Image (cartoon, rainbow, N blue to C red; front, side, top):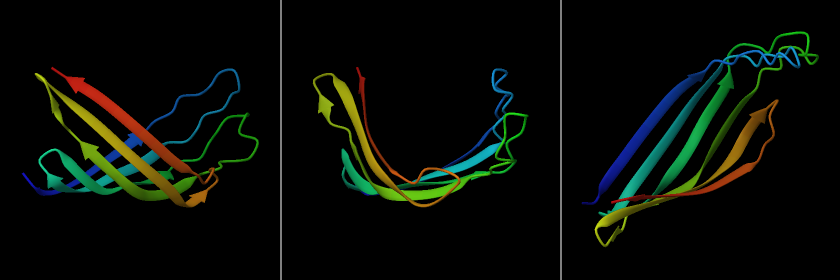
Length: 119
């Protein structure tokens, strides 16, 4: 059926110390989101994005730049295609996310294409 999907996935990443460099990246929070409009039962176009913020600073004697907290935000187009093929179901996901704001991180574009097959 046709319809709209809204998904929000929060997460927290806890990092351990790298004993070779005596460096520990701080705790990180991220919020990933998806908004899809299904144009048919097997195809949707939408918007993907994320918000990222390092909530505690880096530490250890290897952290020569200080706590170096980072943050970023990105958004861009995406699609979902789920055609039935024979007795199985294929899923193809694509997205292009552009960083609009990055602090203490590289600002860039992310393009991914993912496929899965279920039978």
